[in-house]
Length: 303
Image (cartoon, rainbow, N blue to C red; front, side, top):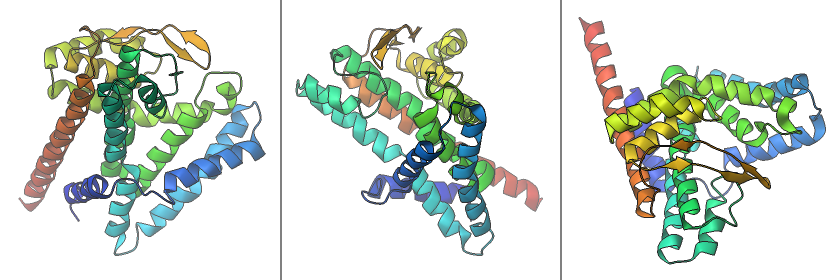
């Protein structure tokens, strides 16, 4: 089955159905990860490595075995649909935008708190808007383009491995006293798996927006962000949208000094929609390139 067709069907299912309201596999995996942490936690890199292996390896092996059966393409599409978070990302961002348009800052703070790990209850209107757009841009890679990249490269096992490691990084990949060692394996694996797709995502943002500005911000600001992969993605996205993101933010009660990304004005509420539009245009670009790549490959093989 064509990879392009599989991706299209999975995107269609996500846009049509959204995330399952009950029994979502990633939610179940998160609960399993919590249980594993409770039973297996120690301030040790070794314990963290073993915990990641115990959680991820069986599911990758299962998906690899399923990939051998004749009708595996149905499982491939289902896995990709469940792994992609395009609909969910847009829904959460639009809810924040609606609350801001209605002047309900308190509700907007609570809603953006579901998207970011920073403290949100004292954010002003600009802070809520920035947090929402930063989440849209970063999760455009984590929940959409990174998943598609690894699906193209390694099928359902690749998409599963990427999404599970990404989930563990979101849970354990903090540089604090509890997770500095235990979460090390999840964080480093996530960095490795995201290195190439993050740069493809940044390139997509640049090519589907203000390209010159995006490339400039990516080149000059991408490496100064705390994450080696989120930096290029968010810098290119901010440059593409011609807005400024980043700056100081509170995390777990501590003020963290963050560099500025982009070189335009601070975003307004409508820029949330512009960021979602950037995701959609980038998705179209990926689909066009994937379709052309498959066509060329078949043309070369047939000749």
